[in-house]
Every structure is written in C-alpha cells, then in structure tokens.
Length: 408
Ligand code: DI6
Ligand code: FE
Image (cartoon, rainbow, N blue to C red; front, side, top):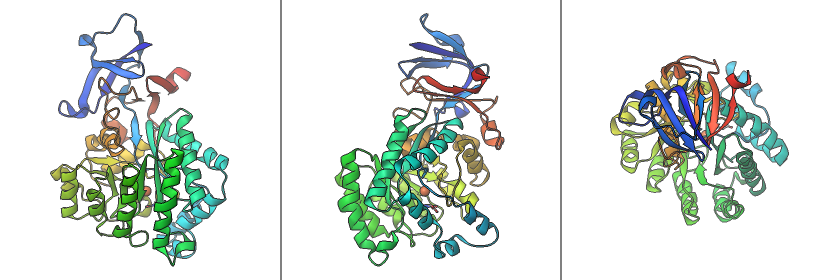
C-alpha cells in the first residue's frame, strides 16, 4: 500500500541544509514500509494510487531511537532513591547489599514471564514517548541462565510489535558475589560460556561491558572484546562514568560502535574517538538522578566532530527514565547541547550508535518509515516542554502503532 502523509512540518534531521533538516508543508510518500519520497508538498509527486492522510498540522520527526537501556530487570529500588535523598550515597547503599546486587538477586529469582510483563510496560511507555527502536541490555543476571533469559525476553519484546528491539550482552556489568575473589574466572565464564551460548541462541546483537574500578579493568574488557570479535559481534563500552582510565582507548582499538557515559574522558581520548568515528552516547538521566557534577566534555566533542547520541539508560538504580523527550530536555539543560544536537542525539546519531544509520535515524527516501508525530509547531518545543507527553502518534515501518488524535 502507498500512503502519502501531508499537512505536516517535517524535521527530517538530514544534515547540511536547514536547521533540523526542516521542510515546511511537507509530503512524505511511504511504500512497503519505506519512505520513497519526501519534500515540499508543492514539488513532491504523490502517486494517484496513494492513500492521502493528513497529520493535522503536527510536526513529524524520525522515530526516536533509544540506543542504551537496561529495561529488563526485576525488583524495586525506589526505597534506595528515598535513602539517597536523605543523604546516603550510591556507594553506601551498595555496601549495605543494595544497588546493582539487589537487582541481580531479584532478576535471578524472576521467571521469563515476570520479566517480560514488567519490561513490556516500560517499552510501551518509551514507545509512546516516540521511540521506534530500543536497545536492551542484559547485565542483571551475571550467570549463564539469567543472562540468556534476559536476552530471550528482550528478543521476545522486539517480536511483539511496537518498537523494534536490538539486544546487547552486558554480562560484564559487575563481578557477581560468587566470583568476588576470582574476577578473571568470571571473565573466563563470559568468554567461554555466556557469549557462545547467546550466539548459539541467536539472541545477541552486540557486546558491552562496564569499565570502572568497581567493575572491570581495561585488560578484562579487552579480553571480552576479543571474544566478541571472534563471534563477529560489534562492541560498545560503559566508559569513564565515575573515573578516568584506559577504557575508551580499548573501545577505540576494537572499533567500538560507541563509548557511553564519558564524564571523565580526556582530551586525547575524545580526539581518538573522533579519528575512529566512535559515537559518544551521553546519558543525562544518570547525571540527573545521581546529582553528579561531572559532565562529559561536550565542547571538545563538538569541536573535534565526535557524533553525540543521547539515550535514557533506563535502569532501576541510576536512571529510572522512560521518556526520550525528557532525555532531550536533560541533554540540552544539563549537558549544554543545542536543541538540534539533542534531537540529532536521539535520531541520526543514535542510529549510528547501533550500526543502523543506513536504514533509520532520518526522514529521507530509502529509510524505514519510522515516524514520531508531535503536538508542537517547532522542533525546539520537544526540548522545551517538560512532562507534557507531546508525542501523539508513532509509525513503525509504515504502519501507525497509535494516534491519540484519531482514537479520540
Ligand atoms: N552504569 C550505571 O550507571 C548503571 N550501570 C552502569 O553500568 C547502574 C545500574 C544500577 O545501579 O542498577
Ligand atoms: Fe548503562
């Protein structure tokens, strides 16, 4: 079926022309789930067989892409949040048996159905904030069975419709208690058993690790990335979130898709990322939730041309965030991105961070017809309004998944 969407302003996010790649009074022609033509309506040939639909004057952007989430998990850490508000630190809570370990215990105890039910609700909320592609990591299992269960649940979510899911193995999130005296033994388990089993089941699209003094060393990350390469899997890294080390250098050496967090990245590391084309994934939800004062070196990234993506980091400890419009706001307000940079961060650059830049992330002919439709006149409003829920319709691969105006 051919559809032509009209009566809309399109923020195509295609670089090089108008800010936001803006097209006023646009027509978008969709065929077979793909955009086959987009341009000003007066100069856009609309095939006579096309079903013409009005977007009622609303703004349309590419479907948003959340390229870093941990949205499969069990348990509840809102009490930790309350304790932090009254003075406890993230480290105090971890030392008292809370933090990531609490989520690992709850996730190990949860069935696939339980994980699926809670993760589905989170994915649905992200989708209703405009997300059409969502990356989902494992990393709260830290044993073979639970890591695989998390990834199977993520795959299943992706097969249910709504947003498309891309899966990432993060068995190297932290060292599980049972390996606390033998972290290299755990790395060997990841390399010898967990990654190969996930590959055999077809549930893993990329491999991630958390490089930090309280997690894994650069040398351990290097070992894990070598294993990923042996299976033909791309890699990415949680790097320089809490302290500086050589993690980013390891990521660049392995041609990582992205390095994420980066609050403590050095100038030399930013330059190395620019040279390698590594995407910087910035996660302002964690900055906000933890009240962190360190900021990623946005000015150096901008100057050297490192592509900056933004993501929710949706997780129960440091970023309980499930709305990409809020992430755009936080990227602008907390990290100092321009609104155009922030919107590029959840579209074109987020697609690049997932290795999907060839088929999504902008509105242009040849890309998937993944669209978010907004109750605003100008793109800047997506960053400006907070908590307004302004995404009013989403299309995935040429099909509307919901439209609040039409349902009303
Ligand atoms: N960095 C983080 O901020 C989260 N994981 C990571 O690698 C923390 C996740 C949690 O506290 O559950
Ligand atoms: Fe994360």
